[in-house]
Length: 225
Image (tube, rainbow, N blue to C red):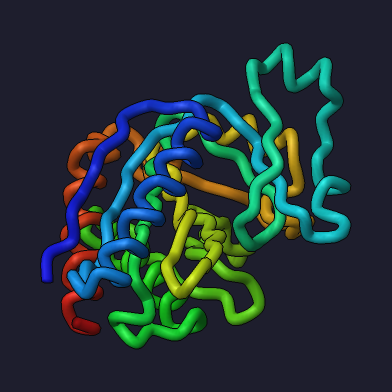
């Protein structure tokens, strides 16, 4: 079964959220009508935005005042995904797989590990070694000299009727200074990084990263099909 890929380009967070809901409804309708659609993969770069979940204490990880957010041109939006608080902006590849987990017999834990593996395999293609942290969802890159690993890919999902929404955010050329406005993912003392910060002039173009991530996700999902 094929998985359609839809590149939304650059889009505000709320508008992309509406797109997710629309595609979720269509995948659910396909299931109910017996069409057995695996789902779709939405790709997007967001306008600068901080998203915070309804998890108790998550809003406390916002460090910036409304005035400071306004100066940086960063919107604040409450979201219904899992996780805590994060930043999205230009240069960050955001991937929203709208996938029928019931059809693929994927449990939530397995699905989260699949997303992590997709990010790990994608950055490996460009010479960056990523890893999991058993205590923190996402993908991390070790620094030199014994410095703590930094997060290169954040994840947060929501599952409704066993169809997924939200997904992962991979830092390619993201403005990392904007992460100083929050405690990223609520993890104090844990830094963030990007392909650009790690590779400099060798950082791949966004289109190349998109192609690699889509190819990897399709491969991993087909294994479940």
